[in-house]
Amino acid sequence: MADGTLLEVRFKGTRRSYFRWAGADDVRTGDAVVVEAERGRDFGHVTAAGAVAEKKCAGACTGCAVGEAIVGEKAPVRDVVRRATPEDLETWKEARGSEEAVRRKVMERVRAHDLVMKVSDCEWQWDRAKLTIYFTAERRVDFRTLVRDLASQFRTRIELRQIGVRDEAAQLSGVGRCGREYCCSSWLKELTPVNLGLAKDQHLSLNPTQISGGCGRLLCCLKYEHEFYVASRKRFPKEGKILQTALGSEKVVAVDIFRERVYLRGEGQASRIIPLSQLRDEQEQAAAHETPAATIPIPDRRQADRRVTSADGASGANSLDSSADDADVPETTDAVDSSAPRRRRRRRRRGGGGGSGNTSGDVS
Image (cartoon, rainbow, N blue to C red):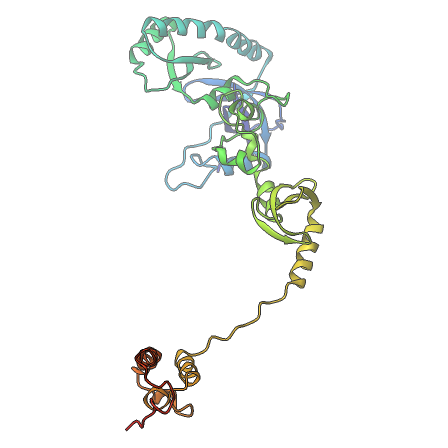
């Protein structure tokens, strides 16, 4: 790693890069510096220096000699040329002041070439060796003819860079509904995906006009408190669950994680709101007063058949010895015993005697 202090330098919009300062004096945050660019020189302001810049670069940069997360040859860290002089600052202000006029000229050439693209912003490099044009488009745009036209008009190197709507909002900046500058423009360095599930977990309105930012996408701040909501709801019962309380069975209608209250509604009862601690006490009391259901023994089927046969007064082939082992009872005993009452009913209809002596016999 080269000697010197590592600096984080911010340019127009959210563009940042890291450079090495080898001067004898210290550079502080907010100082204007002139740095080595890819082709020529650029102008920026220092946003971090020393250990802070080393830590930020190690977490975000992986393509230079400072960020060593990738394997292979590292690109060298460029140097800071010098502190910016008053003349350098005036040159930078002139370049910034002419960018709006340049953007309008680019828009005219886009309409002349009949291209479906929206020109968001233009950025001059400090030495005017390069002009970067940022645009948004729903589809891929063939702008090769446009680049040649613009290069001949501005006499410089032209770079067209397609960005998304969220990147466009970060580039142009603005004021959110909270009254502060967009997070993506001020301090949020990386734009992470935000989905509709974050709004559902926080029970927010799913109206797009209320949960969308200036870019038309979901608010980045929906992700800031999501972990808090998920962790807090684990302490509460789920909505729609049936609970046993002091008033009987009640359904959880809603929960208030900030006031720690639960909305309950019982069948045939009015809704009520109780604290979470009271709900837990009522659940414990309801569980303590519940008596376990009586255990009803299920008799063996062969033993039940023996009781039915004995009650009917049958003997011999239709009666079994109660002292016999279950293993000695043949498998066809159930069928014989179940048909015995029907035979007796048929004998009674024919006028035969219904006594037990008429149906008894020895089993050989």
